[in-house]
Image 1 (spheres, helix red, strand yellow):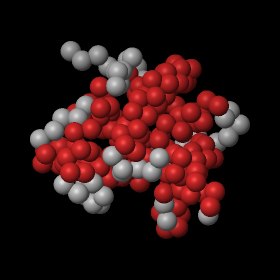
Image 2 (image 1 turned 180 degrees about the vertical axis):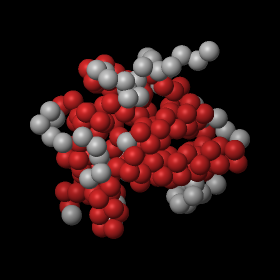
Image 3 (image 1 turned 90 degrees about the vertical axis):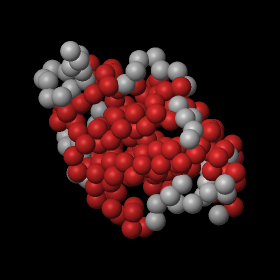
Length: 212
């Protein structure tokens, strides 16, 4: 009999290693749990949910096509095939998956650190620091409108406890642990995206912003 999770964060492995994100099946399972996180919060994260779901499909399709089982193998195969910059490639899917996850993680970072802000304000602040710079005006407006639909903090945390009362402290503790463990692992994938030319290096981005 499967153990019922106390909080949403019990769906993730504790003390994960790099394999949790560098193995594609493990990464896609992680991403599927991010979809569930978005579903728990309703319309506020609908755009993030659909974006993550679409990018999961791109990565899975690429791995099946090239018969690979790791993120790096997929990036290598698509670069060799000169397909890594195609919109439907697994490489681009991975790039946008990481950007969406960065937004979700930033929400989780800002929530416990911002007791005086509403969830709407936290969501928009997180978006401004992450995805916003990659979006055109239309997408910015759509995301801003969506993030205004966040519930209040109590409801947000209650949903992450599967509607069990008096769990806010436990949920926040689990959230901090999750961000600390998985946030560091995301850096492994960011490194690979830069290594194989899918994402600009942080240095290049800084140089571009300073000359614009």
